[in-house]
Image 1: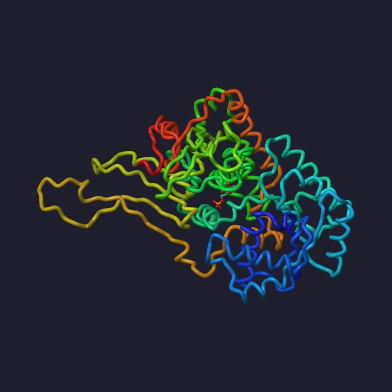
Image 2: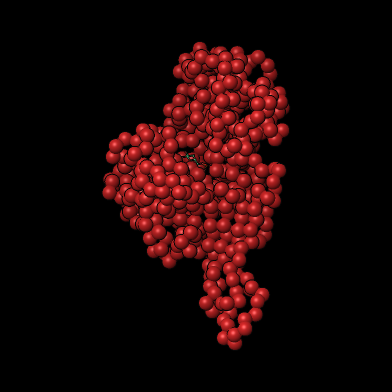
Length: 489
Ligand code: BG6
């Protein structure tokens, strides 16, 4: 297969920190067709060679050392990398792109828009005007897609005017994480869990996306965005749809996306009163994270003084359908929390009647997204020891244990990272893991009343110390229902 993969925003952070390392990994794994060309597009004056040199220097600094290429690897990978200078607002420059692409016949052209989303409409319009929207072209749209429902709709309208829905791939890299694939396999490839996957057996579900990092160099972007838009509207809600959806009729992209959309539509809408009761927002103050002293959000570079942007959100929501009525779903995300730690925890109900007094430990299934990637099933087991005392209780012989499945160990050679997978899917036209515009708009519709309520209630922002699990109110939110977050139980 030959392909042309064009990165708009070719010198941006996302391109060198995530996309190019992912492509390089795909190359390393022998998954990147050798006839393919990768074109970085940006405003600066550069040649192929000077761009390659720049990229080489950048890739030598990527966070994950295992993903840094050796000199020889980079040189071989870089033969597929090219550069084109373009001013994205100038129609003539799209002719340059057309000429560059037109130089040969290619099966697939993927335009990856890794730019600020305010440029998406103009880029799509100009691609259309230059005739670069034929059926072989796909466009990948990075988040954030808008900052509210109206702006997301405006972007989608501009995209739809030029590309069909099946040509427009909205990326949510959390869906590319291996554990999320495993969640699908667990639910729909096994008979064990499905009968229990409902209100009769499940007490509550918790989704935690915790980061230990702060806002880093992205203070200005983050301050306009906040945790609700950055993580909940997309990543957390997408995970929730994967946990809660009905079994799709097939593995076809639209069969899956139809079911995910139904979940989003069934989420109980918020109003001012339920936001005040069920949503906690916080902002980090100075503290200690993993042994290092770190500044508070207001002292981060490019954050305006007195900012009221939230860096933490915890919320309780409900899905109004037969399967999930009355089961609380707790979502939580934040920067500068105690550890980098993302997981989905399914807490089962206690046994209806215990014959082992004092040993109630309800079953729990933990789907770990990161830093490790695996599944843990918590069960009650007998220790196999016999007490010497006549009075030894059952509780002394029984113990909670967990069945651990570490996917990194089970499948060490085949694991691919989220962006690597999403890029290969985009090239192959596999749409299952991309978000459809109706899902994305429905997610905005659901978070908007929260944004609205916060606008009228600035006092609801609670401080928390960096290195903790967020404001105490987040624990209270769960405790009110008689539950606790996993790390507190
Ligand atoms: C991005 C957010 O979508 O996801 C970032 O914009 C966040 O703020 C990142 O840090 C987290 O992704 P991951 O894969 O590192 O958990």
